[in-house]
Structures are given as C-alpha cells and as structure tokens.
Image 1 (tube, chains in turn blue, red):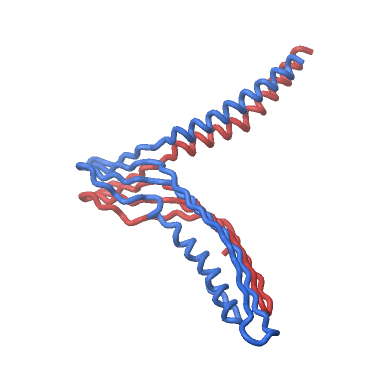
Image 2 (cartoon, one colour):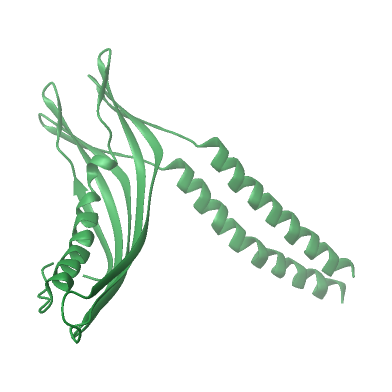
Length: 133
Length: 104
C-alpha cells in the first residue's frame, strides 16, 4: 500500500515505515512457515507440518513544531510482537504414496480435558443441588 | 486494507519420481491500522494477526490426482470439548426441568 503523506520528511518517512511494516507482516505469512524443510529418511521424505500464528501491534507519534526555528521534531513509538508455531503432523512421502501422521500434544489435550471435566463436575453438582433442594 | 482476510495458498511442488506433491495451506489474517495527520505531527497505530494452518497435500502423478487432508488432531479435540461444554448445560437444564415436572 503506498499512501501519499505530504509535508515534513520526518513524518513522511515515519508514515512510510508504518505502512511498510504491515506489508512486510502480510508477506511473512508464507507457506514456508507451515511446511518445514523435507528430510530424506531411507526411501521416504519426511515433511514437518506446523500451525503458525503471528501477531504484532504498534503505535507511534511524530511531532514537528515548525513555530520554532531550527529542527525541533520529536518521535516516539512502541510495539509488541509474538509468533507461535505448533506441530500438527508429519507428512511421509513414500514411493507408494503419501501418509500423514498427526501429532498430538498430550499436555494440551490433557489440559483441555481437565478443564472440561472440571466444568462438567461443576454443572453436575449444580444440577444435583437444584434437583434435591 | 483493514479487515479479515482468508486465502488458500499452495507451495512449491516437491518432485518424487514421476509424482509431484503440492503443499496447501489456509491463511487467515486480520489487520487494523489508522493514522492521524495534522500540519505539524502525525500519530498512528495498528495491529496485525495471522494464522496459517496446513490443509492438504495434493499428490499428482501420471493419470492420478489425490488430495491427502491434514487433520489438526489437537484443534479438533478442543473444538469438540468446547461444543460439549456449551451443549452440556443446556442438556442438564432440560433434564432438570423434566425431572421437576415429573415430580410435580
């Protein structure tokens, strides 16, 4: 995206960099993040497969007081970013065909299961209290 | 452009003998950005999020094409548990009502 930002070069550069950051982020969401480098194992080729999520947030401000003689600009900004990859499967490409082996994250599954169990116990207890009150 | 976007992308084919394997993924992305310009200053902020997930491997060979789906077992399990967690209170509420009516 190219947007015309007239005026002060400091502001113009900052705004251009602001938009370029989003363009770079969009192009970084590529398929190469999802499918890893193929690994040859005997007759087979193994491709690791992952689910990838990315996030960033930025904020900035540029000021240029032109009522004062000489350079009197100020600039500030901040941001945060996070990238998370989670293994999903191993794809095995064999001479006779392709096979996909899912990867189960046992800790995550256990946590989800325990949370659900706790919720179910709470609901069951509440229902029993209502029934026998 | 601000907003939610979904696209399906395919990677470089991997050649194995006379077959080629094409990886396919789905990318969800969301961005929101805004700038404010005045004569002597500018301010802006924004956020961007994306989620790339594998969908399938497409196997093409002489006279054949096959799509091998990639299943995210963890995500499926979590979705099932979330749906169950939503449905369970409804079922229990119906059971409670039914039990109360029966006892009246």
